[in-house]
Image (cartoon, rainbow, N blue to C red):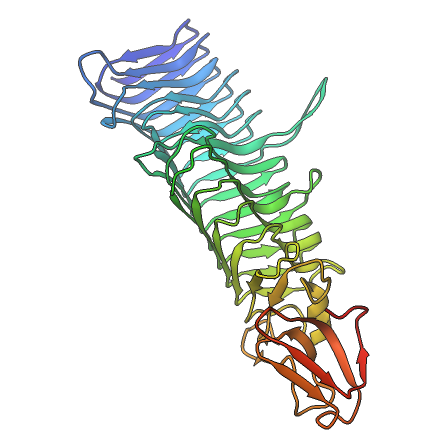
Length: 465
């Protein structure tokens, strides 16, 4: 079907078939959907629908897609305009594969896209613009997964209704995974900008078990309340291994206005699942709020690696990186520059004698040890927090000058005393004829001991443990 224009109808264009090609088609001012594509029947579980140069504007819903019950359903919509509809832009109820490419989806009075893909459904959005819709840019549920590549989501704002402010997220997707199949989420090479309400929220379904792989790579997040959140909650106790990669992204100019949110947050409330989270080579710049990155690993089942990130000119009232639970964390080769005072670069969880954070080889915004201790909000600053191992550290933001002061340096009478004992230690007056300044708290684990023999010590902190 080619070169067709339908205007001011009751049902727009309804297509019920398993194979079709549409080109240069327009449906406007329909009282239901501009296009209703039904790509299934009782005899076939294979469909192939291709639509190009489509205009679906000023209808109720712009485009409604219903596809079959298997994997072999392929629906492609390219070079489309879906705009100014009084309800949703694109509504897809599909168990197959849907591709939206080079489309503009804007100014729809409800959602830009509503996804109801609970059984085997996968959607791919490529080189498309989703902007200025009255509710969510994308909302719904996917099972097989979603991929967004080289697209832009922008200009979703707060709207005032009679009952008050209604906050909108530019993407709010629930992931429904089956026990036997992997759900994949890929967001790459895209721009998410000027969405002054909420950010991309991915939520794992409460009552569906299955592994998840998430990749967020090479995106620009700019201007809004927060950028990205993954909330994984699982009722099934099954040993799934979920892999989450957050890499090469830029987060800038976010300003929190409520709820003590983080610019980037991972919330994991599963007891039996094991999550691998890699947060690498990202840049956080000119953001304000409560947290930069927050990892809520309630049961300590995740392994988190945060490396080669740059944090510059941010103003977080609590911490740049917040770890409220005893999470297995490696934190290396990061640059913390121009921190707001008295914000923490790293906030460690509550004290546990068997737990510590490996945070060596970072630049903490200063080469002064006492300033670094004050920036790392762990045991040495407040003994209510867990210990952070941060020596050696870099003295410059280019990560070229690594320094490694010892906890107990017997060659210098006024050494940098304090920190974690990694061997049995004896401090005798014969070794230190001058008073010793204990600059930092001392943590002694079960297998080591420290002895003070005939020694006069001046404690630089209020308590020694």
